[in-house]
Amino acid sequence: LFRSRWYSEFAGTGSRYIIEVLSKELKVNEDIDELVERRKRKYEERVKNNELELIGGVVEFLDLIKKKGMKTAIVSGSHRTNVQLALKMFKLEKYFDLIVSGDDLKERKPNPAPFLHAAKLLGLKPSECLGIEDSKAGSQAVAAAKMKLVIINSPISKDLNGFKAPIIDDFRTFPLEM
Image (cartoon, rainbow, N blue to C red; front, side):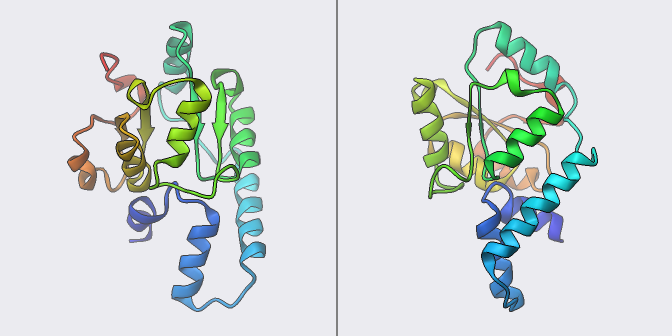
């Protein structure tokens, strides 16, 4: 149940939002800032312990789009340091021109502001951009930004059919004709 709820409600929204909602629901009376920091440290620990895996074909996909001269950004509700740590661990820093993290804007997914901000910084119109998402909040944000969307299969992908976007299992099946 929680995994499904994670993708449908929390993925992409950032630690503070997640902790505020769950603390209220569960009547947890701890300092929100401390809980956010503890969650951040737990993620850093997982990265350092090699507990994360890349989605199949992602390196080859990133090689291809960089060779084509396409601009790339990561738009994440996560802390910038967490994004940078994961990129460093997988040696993916060179593939991204820009990171828009949860530390950069007040607005979070499903608000389109983070994606629109990334497009602006890259010098692109939203209609020239493609968002790749695995969550409801992220898919809603990409759609609201009027960008093309590809959805990575997750426990709630069937609930995202309304976006009329391709759903992929990994980057080896990416619809390059987009």
